[in-house]
Each structure stands twice: as C-alpha cells, then as structure tokens.
Image (cartoon, rainbow, N blue to C red; front, top):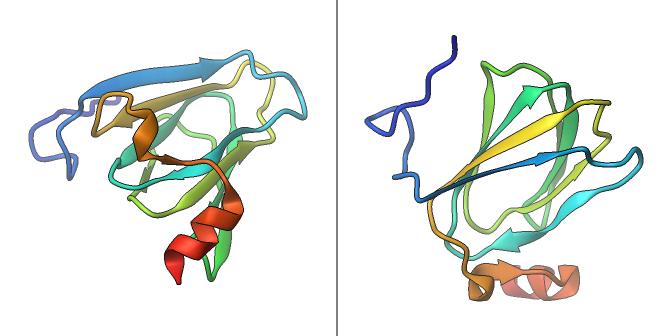
Length: 114
C-alpha cells in the first residue's frame, strides 16, 4: 500500500486529482509549464518518462514505481512520453484547473525566464 496524505507529506494542499491512461504508443502529453501550480506525478501503473526543462537545463526522469513520485514546481516545462502499455499517470495538483496558469508556447516559456 502506498499512501499520500494531505497532512505534511506534500508541500501543497491537493485541490485536484486526475489521471492519464490509454495514452497511445508514441504520443506525448504535457508540453507546457505552469505559473503557480505545483504537481506530484506518480506512475500508478506501468512506466513513462517526464522531460523537465527550467529554461537552461533539461533532464528526463523515468517513473515506473507507484511508491515514488515526481514533484514539479511552478516554472518548469514538462513533457510526458514513452508510455508503456497499460501505464497510468496519476497527478495531484495544488490548484483547480485554470487555463490562465498555463504557458503552452515553448518560445513564450523561454521568454518568461529572461
């Protein structure tokens, strides 16, 4: 059993939970950054990779265990890719959905870092 409690185990209060499943082979998800939102991303089943980009450095993290999570803070570009068959990506978010919080254009993301 893996437990995530909203009391002390996360640096934010969970306001939204969603998951991605049945992502077709070769498809990507994400491709954006957030201005204020923080997220904890967990591979609840299967595996996938997360490309992280702070505007200067890029790193790819493989998530493949449901007892590990990846905390993504505001201002980090992320792309989720290479989903295994049956992968489930569970996301705990610090805010409800707000389109104005998204930076969806990579060029504008880089400009925001200058």
